[in-house]
Image 1 (cartoon, rainbow, N blue to C red):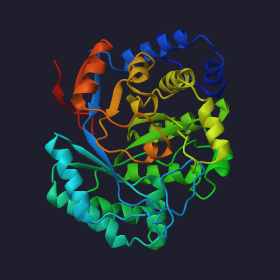
Image 2 (cartoon, one colour; image 1 turned 120 degrees about the vertical axis):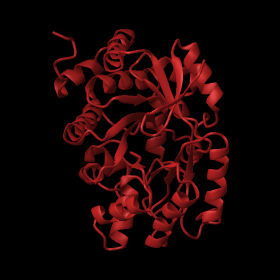
Image 3 (cartoon, rainbow, N blue to C red; image 1 turned 30 degrees about the vertical axis):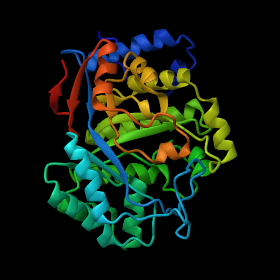
Amino acid sequence: MNMFDNRLQMEQALELFSNNNLLELGVIADLKRQHLHPDSEPVTFVIDRNINYTNICSCKCKFCAFCRDINSPDSFVLEYETVKSKIQELVDLGGTQVLLQGGLNENLSLDYHLNLVSSIRKDFPDLAIHAFSPPEISYIAKNNNLSVEKLLEELILRGLSSIPGGGAEILSDEVRSKISPNKISADEWINIMEVAHHLGLNTTATMVIGLGEKPENIVEHLLRIRSLQDKTSKFKAFILWTSVASSNSCDRYIKQKASEITAYDYLKTLAVSRLVLDNIPNIQTSWVTQGLKVAQLSLRFGANDFGGTMLEENVVRSAGANFHKTTSDEIARCIQKAGFTAVQRDTAYNILNIYS
């Protein structure tokens, strides 16, 4: 019988968290990665850009240093021509995916969001538009008296390709009530993803640690993601982040909890995630929060994807992250030095280029 035939449940996953032999845990997670990707040892990445179309947000999450009130002197809403110029720079560098995310801005009309997607699709017909996290989808729908399904249908008609997994943080309301009481609940996040999946959209799933969560909360999060994937098979990847809260605008409690999270915690949680999420094919590393060296190491702790080049990243950088700039060549070198083949992919994980 294969060692991975029996699925991990809550009790077994918690036992893994109590295992202080990090290298042993890494070996098991690496074997799971090889089991899911048996043909060769490529590590994939995408050339992309994150564009935040507004930083005006009513949610006021305690870990966020990016959001602004509408009257703040540095608040903004991007006009389409600005978005277009940013995307043109991405495309000129060989980029294939744009990620659009913004704050929960009540002054942005439905037409703003729909026209943003349709204009990008018109001007960049081959670009993957990976846009609007579940909290944004929920907010836009409620503000316009639409169901989530109807809003997503309208966005799909205009060219939406897929949905990012932002806003998940920890899918346990025990944690969410403390760190983001104004954000959608864990159930709502799952329900929006399920609607998106039934409409044919692929999505990603995310998790953020360093928010005061316990191992039980982490495992609850993973099991909820796995359960939905059993029903829909539409999560293309899982991405684990660590909280970054060195900015003075972040909550003191969150800053303390974020400061307690180490690379050890990240690698352990990554390995457990790979073992629990047996039905999600791809696990991304987070060089943005961990740096390129830990990201290299994570390729032996269950990760098989390096994420994106992120030509632009603002949210984590605002909170104080030191790692927010790299290139496709640098990512390829990191992958190769770790002993893997570097492969550029698109959003759907189709191979575009193999680096020699």
